Image (tube, rainbow, N blue to C red; front, side, top):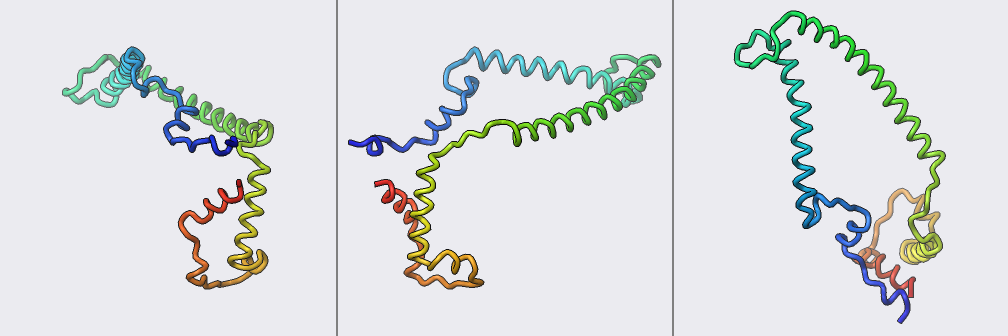
Length: 172
């Protein structure tokens, strides 16, 4: 048997396993799931508590339904001082991130080697075979590309797997 006959079509899950590896969603790995879930909850709490304290003690200072972390004037003054600082820092960081993104996109497009992910001779052979098929079925390429309207006869319609079968025939 030839090498082409021994190859079996890959299942989508098999292909995903080749490129995507994440122990959290794989079967087993219970301790990884527990550890990552606990750490995610802890870090979200570390984000939520300071935000709650700041908002409740500044913007919602007159609302008695909230527990306030501080009630003294120096805390609000410090918050509003840092408010200006954080706005300026945000603008500076946004500019840096935008410049970095543009620079990185330029590097990827211009300098990173791009590897061909397909068999180029096989693709060119398929293109030629497909072009010959289209020419036989619908006329030459120049006619197909320059005609304004074209009514396809019922016998010219493509079957569901006709192109796929054409590729299989070409491989033989």
